[in-house]
Image 1 (tube, helix red, strand yellow):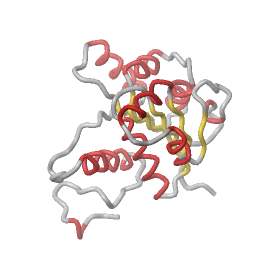
Image 2 (cartoon, one colour):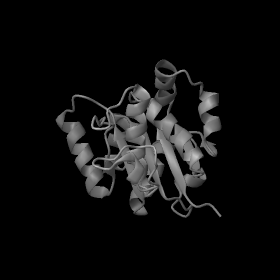
Image 3 (cartoon, one colour):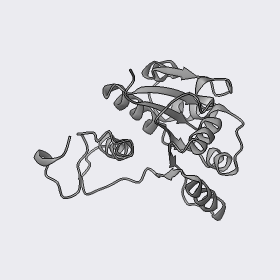
Image 4 (tube, one colour):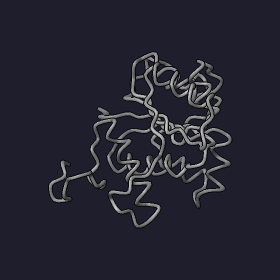
Length: 194
């Protein structure tokens, strides 16, 4: 029996390493993952990371094409614990906020909202205009968690990996996975709850 099952969407916003690192960490935690990558997510991933599409697909338990609206995860009857879109482009955010389900990423996000499942949107854009802010407000009112990948510095990161891992760890906290690799405010490493 699967303990946890999480959908991961990677869209075209900068920061595809967040989605990739989520896949790596969830595999370590033995969480079943269902991956969807948008066309622009693929392009951004090639520009920003050393990973090939084939390598990233292999990190997931199941890979779904973004144009396959008949995939299992497009239905609320398929049981999942939630979805993380990392990064979440402003285009994807706009579709989610307005209920447009033109691809599997936005359809799956819509399913999370209607089924009252956890939907984490790692919204990636700066600066934000009023349309972005209103779309975030609408998505949050519908039940999404707006989780921009803003780095913490109390953990004294030394590398980009430290920043990415801390952010990913905080996202996984949203699913009560409580990873032991993140540094928590005010807690010595020896006393962290695992």
